[in-house]
Length: 459
Image 1 (cartoon, one colour):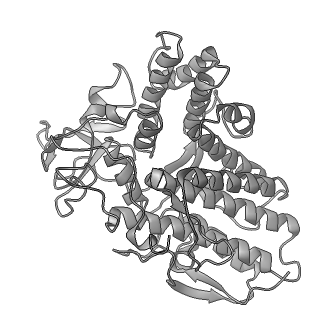
Image 2 (cartoon, one colour):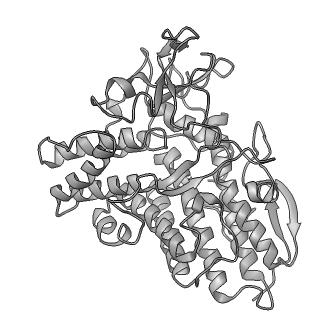
Image 3 (spheres, helix red, strand yellow):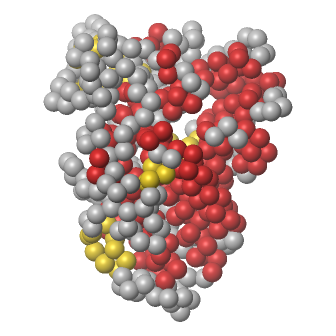
């Protein structure tokens, strides 16, 4: 195999290796284009040890700017408000306040985009490095494992980018040249790319032997061998399947090979993890729920107002009532918006952040059973009841119809997956964006974020 003369490694690969290797992501106010030459070093003739470092850094780079991405989704999807007096674009641009439009040059567009393509480039470099090793430093099975791992993460990053940009599509990065600017893809083409990557990765993982030649973080506990990581891959593939309305594929192929378990812990799954260890990251969407109104994270009031009586996922769990030192109500108000409820989904600054978990898989199966060409409404109800019962709610007692069960499924996704990055995407794909509340006269609900302005040159 031809040796690679050099592999450019962007800053996060060298500086980010999660807690067990003691490095960190730089705090950068404005990130440059991921197609630029923002390099932190060069690896010549990579070794097996370099593969371990690159693999760990690739996982850790997935966490870059998740804070901004989830503020974007949470605000536009009317799950929460990010009140920050020093940053009015949160409550104006993201909510379509007045004549505001989403800005292709604003931080809320450019930074998540750059983060996604940083992760994609890291993973492509990892694949190139593994394929360039000489003298049997990696076995064929281990090389397959690296490719399966990296391509799964590439697909995940592309999917997040497509979730944000939606009808505006995404850019495909040249996997053999991290510095090359690839073509812009339509939404359909973007999904086809993601599906191809996940399926190719699954084939790689099936030929990858018993172990990876690197160590994953505790966020992938239970999914840290090729065979168990394949379950994670198939879980993501099931998510994409329902996104493109391939309900039969979700039911007959992908869910069965995932880690779905109606008798298991709903929280079981893969996560981004954080710690207080030197140079590691803290959970970027944790904030004290009683923080001052001018710098606070609060739940959209409708999350509490629309909840079913007895749902234990609401007050005291995912949100808490804001009170002052005397215990009196202390709502947060900014820019004509008010909430009485502090966000409390992530209880501490080291709480893990789900990538995908068992609860979502059960909801995916329910959705697929409701909407497939041969619906199984009883099976869908059973999965919805697992979610309801875990939330302290009785079995579903409504009509056994597709329309009614779809309403129930959307409701359970709203409360079970609250502030995990799903609400806006769900309401859009179910064609229910008009059901999201408009908080002030003149506000708007957007369908897509713009492609960053620096990406449109030559497209």
